[in-house]
Image (cartoon, rainbow, N blue to C red; front, side, top):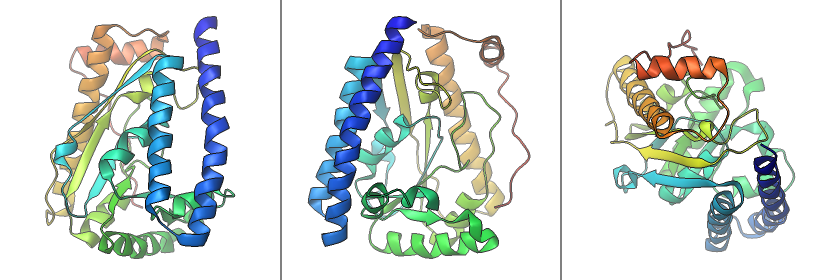
Length: 274
C-alpha cells in the first residue's frame, strides 16, 4: 500500500508539473492563433507522456482498441466515464475532437483557453432549459468543421458497477446532428478511481464499438447505446476481476463483482430528462 501510494504521488507530481505549463503554452497559442497543428502536437505529447508515466510510475498499462469503428466523417463518440484516464484513451482516435464539458472548466485560466482551442463545447447548467439548445448550436458548428464530438452520456464519472444513469443530452445531440454514434466502453475506474488519490496497478482498457447509424427512433437509439456501452463495460470489468485485481476490494464492490460473475448486472437509475 505504501509503495503504491509513493508511485501514485510521483505520477501526480509529473502530471501537474507538466500540465500547468503546457496548458499555458496552448492557451496563449489559442489566444493568438486559435486551433493549430502546434497545439494539437502539444496535446498529443501530453497524452502519450502521461500514459508513459502511468505505466512506468504507477503501473497502469493502457489498452485501447476498435478505433477502426470511428467513421472518417463527423460523428459522436459517446463514452462511459470513470476516470481522467478516459481523456487519454479517447483523444488520439478522435483526431479532431470536440469535447462537451461543463462551462466551469472553461473558466479555469489558460486551461479554458487551451480547451476552447480544440472546439470544446460548453454546457452552462446555470442556464437551465436553455443549456441544451446552446450546446446543440455549438455542436452543429463543430460538426460542420469536421470535428468528432465526444460526450459522456451520464454527465459525470461513475464508479465501476455503479447503477448507470444515461441522460437525454446525447439523445438530443443524436437527433440534431443526424450522424453516427460510436459507443465506448471502458474499465478505467478499477485502477484510477474517481474519489481515490491512489492509483492501482493493472491494465485499463477502452473499446470503441461499432457505430450506431443515424435516424433511429429515440428510444431505440437510447436502448442500443446503453446496451452496447454497459454490456462491454461489464465484460471488461469482469475480465479484469477474473485475471486478478492488484488492489483492495471493499465488500460492496466485491459483492457487485460476484453478482456480475453470476450474470447479474447493475440496475439503472431512473432516467433523467435533460
